[in-house]
Image 1 (cartoon, rainbow, N blue to C red):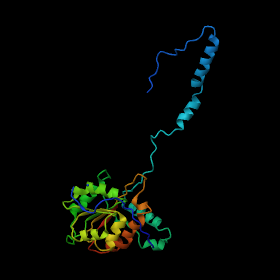
Image 2 (image 1 turned 60 degrees about the horizontal axis):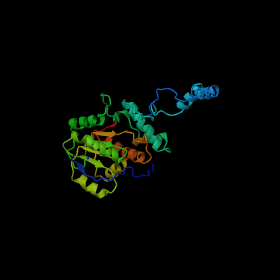
Image 3 (image 1 turned 60 degrees about the vertical axis):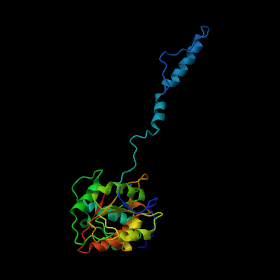
Image 4 (image 1 turned 90 degrees about the horizontal axis):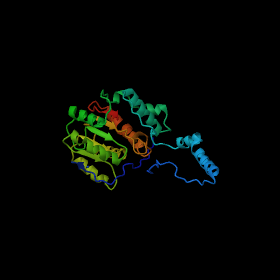
Length: 274
């Protein structure tokens, strides 16, 4: 499967460990003075004006009803199922969409299965991602020792703006800093160097940069316990698994790195769409 990779993570920022980032109605009635010599003419004129305002309610109602009120008109919300088999089916559906030429036989070698999904009972909330990360970090007892560039939780987002937002929210999860992984005015060599000297529990990034750092070996998966696919919708109602400039890199992370690693008995990470 050929992959054309483009950068989706566009935001000016430095790679770093984050240690903090009436018109008043006239109640006096009609004040028009009518000439006593032409009462009928004036009355007729006023009557016609009144008739135009009151005798055609259907026309007025139609005009008003055709104007959008702005209330009750919302764009479709991306729905993430809660059951493991439904999450796996959703992932596979969009993976096939990202590779329209793939056959079912070829797809079968890359399918996500329900056993790959992290099962959780609490209902999603505004702090759902934070809660998932806390659980993974607090209960994590990896067989592999702590290593530089080897997080326990990896959150994959659609944009650098979203990464920055989640990094702020995930700071309390671990005493170690939270890695933010995206590009623009950031040399990948600088990130590679930082990963070789930094021990972290949580990393948040965009697909393109994560894929490059994983395939280069700087971002390791040996301590990984949870991969969260952030299905947040941006202002254009786009989601990371269905954006032209993110989905191929996202599914390449799964096909080329995480799926093969999941066969290693020493690795015990799970996925969750959130």
